[in-house]
Image (cartoon, rainbow, N blue to C red; front, side):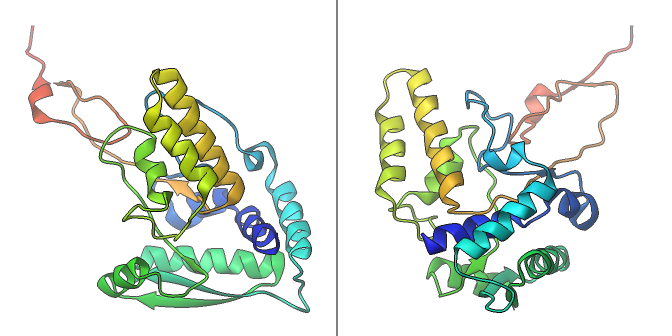
Length: 235
């Protein structure tokens, strides 16, 4: 339970609105769940953190931190690993600062070149926290959630949880689409509550499209096949 309280404290202590407005600043939206909005068929639900103000989240973070057995006099020591990138350095510095300010945590940043970072992540080199991101190749909630399945090659977190795996297995075996969607939603709720990962923001895409271009439709995968695009003919 100690690690569980600590993970939740770290998540609540992050001010996602500050990060998206002043650190990333590219139109990202704050994230409290794994699956981004707009994925077809995925039920909408509200995470506990979304119902709170940032002040309430920070107060809960400090309470959970104490429940985990830590304090400013006896702080947790964390290593935060990230790959070489100026924007990511700004992001990790901001997150580390929030953890220090709200909880008193001692955070060491470890920067690695991309290939080294990916290799260490795949080999699950010991570190407390590392950054990660995911862009789905199909518009399906399972594409995001399967990264946490015990036997997944992309399970960089190293999570091995029978209950979560059971939710995914139930979704795979579901006969009806509604039942499958509910199983995937239950799997996501479990991940968010367990804090297998700390969602921070959802990516955004920006395009400059002339008014006479037709067939350009926004979609979660940001795929725009040219066969569907055309120029509006003049009347």
